[in-house]
Image (tube, rainbow, N blue to C red; front, top):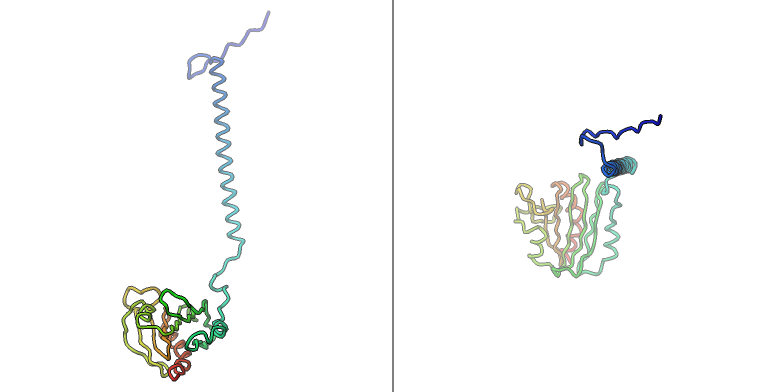
Length: 218
């Protein structure tokens, strides 16, 4: 007696056996679905691996304050190299420990046609004071340096009279000009502006007083 041939299984969705073409199409679709799932899984695994690598880098690589690690600028040496190139001597403050400079340069061929010597200072309290010495400058140049602020009065520091510009209570501080001091000596207009308090401005002004007085006498 020959074995019976098993009849094709009835597919519930169809209510009848699949045709060979339908069987082939179903298998092809199942293969495609499997490949798609594998692709998505691989993408997820790759993303997780990338995130893990970033976390490791963040934890391992040392970080610090860029300002704290930047070596201070030696404005005294820069001034010595530039002395004699302008009509007045470049002013150079001698400041106590804790002060440092992050910038110093002699600015020439500027758009305003005024050469100037600039020193950017970081105070012990973490504030900023900029010293700008303009040569043969006019009132308009000085006004630009203090962001066209109004004079709030005058202040005598070690025999030098300064015009005072105080924007601390104005509610709108133009740039870093929260406070400013200006004076004239020789052919120089000397401007101090920044975010420091009165005592730190006085420290800088005092450090410049002798040199400013000398310029006034020339």
